Image (cartoon, rainbow, N blue to C red):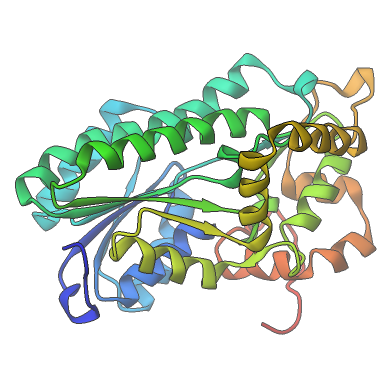
Length: 331
């Protein structure tokens, strides 16, 4: 199964974590469009219900299961339910994630534990639970969604970077250990993508100003990548067994620069850190989700800068009734 063709995917089963919104929902749509049956999981039952309706409306055969991938017992139960329903799993996509944005002084030990549980241990839990089945089949694809944050540790996303560095290491080591077994492992290293994630990210410290830089970066076309295009490339790379895929020119350049010139890269990141907001002493522990930080920022100019990201948020199940994000015109 190292090289699947469209006709050979019908009836095959993909298990996708974090599949209810954003990039995860786009990956699920892409897999369903290629004829695969789906098992999607997420922590929020409401998000899952909306995603399930979306995918079934596109003709998808979907099993949606609430699951926290940081809990190994919950993951084992999810995999057992998936096998009971479909009898097989052919593709595993480890996509579940969260991001906390803010300076180190605004972060807590719990922030690091939360990030590591979801994005480092989560892929470990899911892989270990599905691997015995994949080994029995003698075929399968594991697609690990990591991040350029797992190659270059940028400031103000330190818990995220720690978890993604772990995910990259796990994915690369897993690929080496499974070489020759018929099970391929693809490490996906995306840069910023327009998936509406800025509205669901968690901002800490000076929440409005943290949201301002992150939201713009995750929305502007010259900086971020179209989410649907990213999903197509990720699934194509994973199903063909490609070892690694890095998305966006900026991410490719950053990874190369960090590998070839680590000292200058560190100095550059230090300069970037100086430009990022510091929280007032009385706001160091302040926390807000992106939709609320947007309300605090209350900037029409920033709403214009995030037009593309907000449009993606509406398209990819990132907006709920409480968010009150106006739907930008056009596609």
